[in-house]
Length: 364
Picture 1 (cartoon, one colour):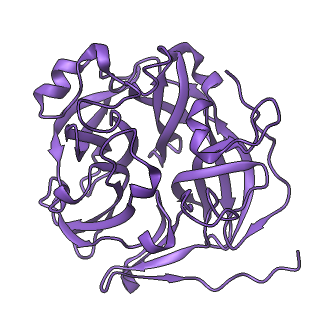
Picture 2 (picture 1 turned 180 degrees about the vertical axis):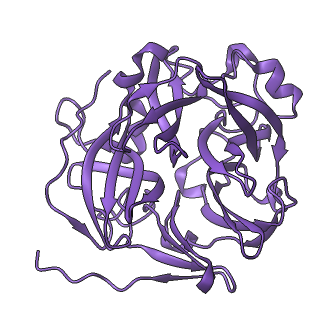
């Protein structure tokens, strides 16, 4: 099922991104040549027949990945159009695509990771895979790798043998969830070079039906494609019992302090039939001296009262102990804000507080 994907919107967005034609959520980014590249999930605000699409029903239609750029540290943004859509990965038979990351490599190309959801049947819409592609300039995905980095169907024994939780193969991706928990979690890959220059990829996973964790793998290139060199045991956090799902992880490294920082989005969904009014979504921050942990919590509910989720770290400013970030509003925000991006803000790591940047003046 194809969905309408508009061309790049010609008007510059200031003080966040309120796209007139698209719902936007989840985000990831990188900086190159003083240009911030922002990516997010997107879908038309209207169904193919012209009817308004209710945000809660957006999983019924395929998403695309949208690309925005900024030259002024996120105070304003330009829409660069569609970066990736399911039709681009038709060889993998993906019904839709979910969050990922884009990371510049030493050769100048960008390594692109994303979540591909298999087109199975109407009762199994959430079977997730970790997929890889490359981009020369960051504006289009130029190649999609034939080899899937991690397929729960293909790699079920290896994955569960490492301590991760997956439902039975025949029930993977069930709309009803896993056992007594929410839907499958094997998504949101984040590519990261650690302090030793080793290529890592993290993603959201589980260690039980209602216990979220991080998957971590180191990657290798074998002259033909990227593949997992080693799938490591699950990465857990100290407040793991306070939420059920861990999503869209981001990790950065402060070389001066020799310390890693990790930001995740979390929620407490117990099952798929649970009313949205009962779901609490939060942003949590952690730190560790070692990429393998243990991780120490710096705080939770950082943006919960603002109804924001799925942030990305646009820039690090460790001299001032702060991270420049942007995040979209959730469906719980006011109707004119939901599934749009808020203005950029700083997270101050020493006291874990948030400070939004002053609004950019505009004559529009």
